[in-house]
Length: 289
Figure 1 (cartoon, rainbow, N blue to C red):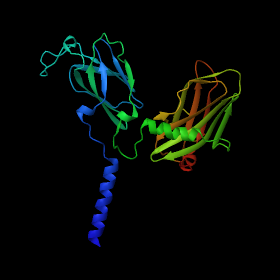
Figure 2 (spheres, one colour; figure 1 turned 90 degrees about the horizontal axis):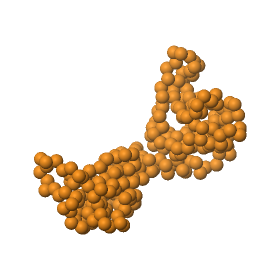
Figure 3 (cartoon, one colour; figure 1 turned 180 degrees about the vertical axis):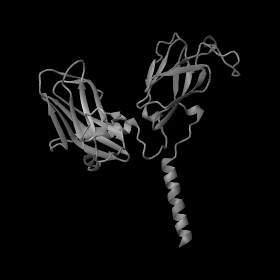
Figure 4 (tube, rainbow, N blue to C red; figure 1 turned 30 degrees about the vertical axis):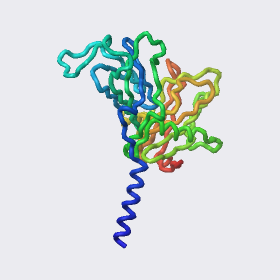
C-alpha cells in the first residue's frame, strides 16, 4: 500500500510539473524584431515591466514609463569593452544585434534584434508584446499581475448595483457609495460609485484613503495612516453625473477604534469635498468572487 501511494504521488507530481513548467526558449526560435540606427524601438507591455536585459553593448535602452521599454542601437561602445562590437555603420542587413529580454509581472518575453538598413521604411517603431510571445513565470500564488487585477475588477464592475450600498454619504448634491467589498486571496476590492446631482462637472484632484481614529478623526492629534491602492480600474479625472470605479488594496487590518476614511477632493478652491467612513466590520463582511 505504501509503495502504491508513493507511485501515485510521483505520478501526480509529474503531471503538475508538466502542466506548469515553462517551455525552454531556443535562440533560433526567438521572434525577430527589426531595428535600425537612429530609430528608437518601443516595446509596449500589457503590464508593468519589472526588468529588461540587453545581451550586448551594441544595444542600449531605458524605461520612459512603467509599461514601455525604449531600445536603440548604441552609438557609444566603451573603449575597454571585451566584446567584439560593431558600429552601427558596420552592421550587415539581417545580422543579429543582440537578444532583448522583457520581464513583466507574470511573463517573460524574448526577441532577437535584427539589423535592417535605414532605407527600409517598413521598420516598426513600436510593437506590442503579443500573448504568443509571453512565457508565464511562476510567482507566489498570492501575487496577481495588473492584468489579472484588471480582469477581476471588470468582473465586479459588470455586476449590477441595484442592491442597497454598504455605505452612502451625501454632501452638496454629491453622493459617495460603497457598493460592495470583495476579497480575492490577499487583495481587497472596493467598489465605489460617485454621483453628481449638479450641472457642473466634477474635476477630481484626489481620492484619498486613510485609517483614522473613529471618534476624533478631525482633531489635530489624530493619528492618520494613508492607504494607497495598488491598482485602480479607471484613471478618469472628471465626471459629469456618475462615476464608478474599482480600487484594489493589499490586505490590511485596523482595530474597532479606527475607521477607514475615503475623501473625494475637487480641483482648485472648490468646497465640493465629500468623505465617508468605513468600519472594519464592513471589510470583514466582504464577498468573494
